[in-house]
Image (cartoon, rainbow, N blue to C red; front, side, top):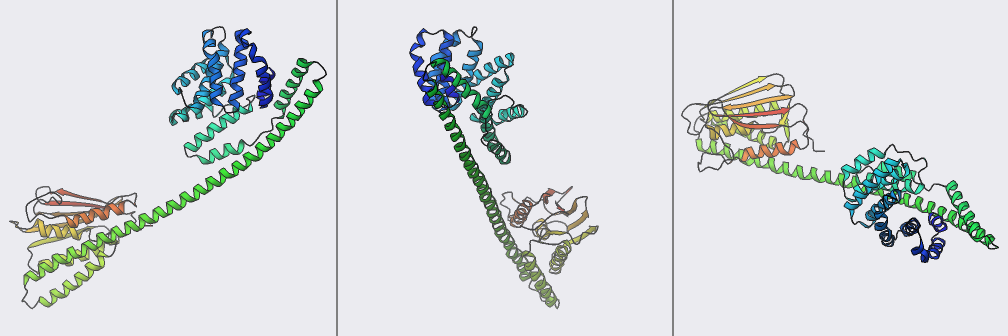
Length: 475
């Protein structure tokens, strides 16, 4: 009993002295006394974090008590809990540890020993974290969140606080973890320390009962002072550790914030370069088509001068649009109308109609989103067509944005399908549109949609949706 009390006081030299004094008599003891002695050895090494030694002593008594568990149910349940505790510390036999915890918990629930249930549920949470079973851990945290700490030994409370701190760190709830750490500053447990010391003193006096009792009392008093000194050192150590933890958490937070800002800036720069690259592809593509068409006409009429002026204006406008992420819908429609008129002027046989419904002129859209499909329809849809080509451009308001429909009666159009037909497009312009939309959509909750569909009877139908709430900013 003296050894047991000194273990609780963390006076390991004195506890070791009394344990060695009684151990030679172990074979002459009844089973319960052997259990009590061996379990004190288990705690003696456990509290010093010498878990292998503690495990070895546990194995010396576990099987024997297991054979008499009907006569010693409480003692066996305690050993099951100790087995699970050491298994967790040593990271071995975790499945068996889980089984023992369940059986021990069932026993102490039947006997309504609240402190033991408190201790076992703490170990269940620690085991779930050890096995990385966060779902079970979350369920256990929910169960123990309302547990009372009244009459719970302080070391049990500290053990639970350590496990809860680890859980909240794992789940990223650092504020909760920090709150638990703050609440776990060294607590002056003067009442319990006094009870232990008085109990040790009383047993010592009864055990000695001679002239050495004064020396023992002085020794106990010195040990009490050492314990208080140790508690003060622990308090200072914990405060220092807590300060370091707070500093580390704040440092990690700053580093993470800086990394996020740098990452966001990199994304911005990369996106900007990609968009620049995409836009730069449009101008050569468009210029080549228009100039090639004009040169092949070999104009000789008096209207040549006017057409060249219109072409120059159109090219200048095209260059301007290709350098802008977004433009008002009215500018895009003006550009498309001039483009169509110029082609019709140079002999292209097709008709074009524009229908607008609502006040949509100021809506911002990605530049050339309408021009490219119109160009594709004229270049590819109407090539070798047996009838007059027609493009119908319909723009109408919707509840969350604007719908744009570009319908033509030309050939069916498959922009990315492999084909040996030279009239089939390579899809460069449409790929540019898709890439533009993809980049822009990553920065918006409401998305732009662009669909190519077969016409109801013939030709191709393109359907575009532009949300009202859409940002072309990259910050």
